[in-house]
Length: 143
Image 1: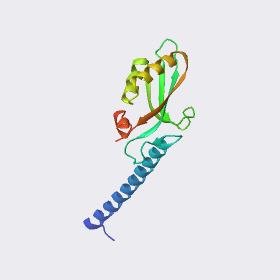
Image 2: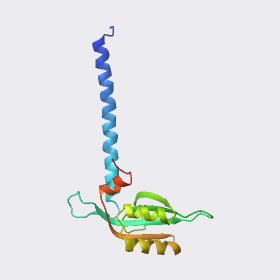
Image 3: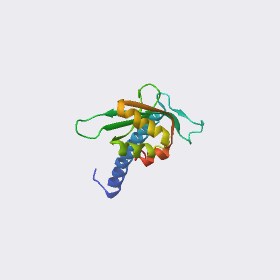
């Protein structure tokens, strides 16, 4: 059978449809994984309408490096030492950490407490923080 312009067009359309279906499946899987990460380990919908965010704990882990500013890993999740926490970002030094916490809407008194604790301890939790999809957009973690 010879190839015609119509048969080639149909073949290209079917090929494109296959790629579109694969992309749709990957997008749905990514969305499910993000939702699972968002609601894990004690994070909860603030008012039950899926629009106003999730309430949980911000976990900050300090990794000290000799002769360099400390590195801070920041995650969001439940109350159990960051188990199942959703990674939010990394900060190098107190100024960068303060900026990141400010983007997350952490109140000033909680930030001051965190910085004081982190001078002596390698881990700190900030409880009862509400994160919204806007916070994730601010950090470049969502569309």
